[in-house]
Length: 267
Image 1 (tube, rainbow, N blue to C red):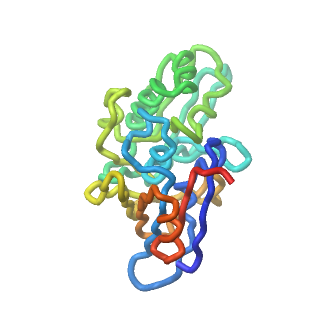
Image 2: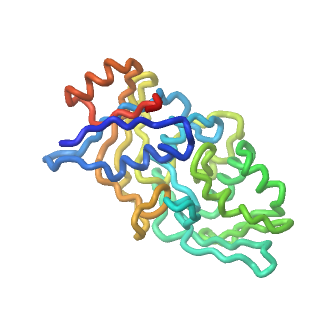
Image 3: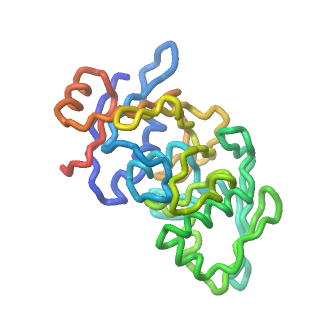
């Protein structure tokens, strides 16, 4: 990699909210063998569950491995992500969602309507906006494996904004068997359908996190725009190397041992 940078991110959710997603387009010098990006995160990843915690490091981990039904673009507009198309009934009470083709979880299973409903219901138990959505929800129903509905008790103009919430807690989609877990208990199996796979065998809390390219991931055709659009993976492997001491981190960056350093220290 011929470019190294230090990314200073503030604690504001809007600034650096998609730090992990930005890695998808990071330039890497061409070379034989796998393309690897070594990254110093702003914190240590200790909790894998982006629903039980609002920690930004876990949120960023979530963006590496999960996907969302909708996403917020750079103009703060809601765009479909895993959803191919949707309709809202004339009385503003029933949304019908249809998933796009080719969605697969990292274990090879297809993403189904039941997975999406279970994931949203678990998220809604912990997230403030999700709780508001739940208050006006009459039912979520499976139509078939790719289509499902949300029926409201009364119109709720923020329904899609809730499903496209870009920061903690993010309504990431998980397999139904995982999403059925208690919403207050941390999940330990990190299986998503997103652009990278989490390599649990190489995870060393306090030191290292490893992700590898999900070769089955089919990005959207639209250009990437903040959390929305096509997430085109350009590196085969991403390593998060946690270095809490700033002097040591700076030395590693200057020595070319890492490619990118993200710090929570304000400018």
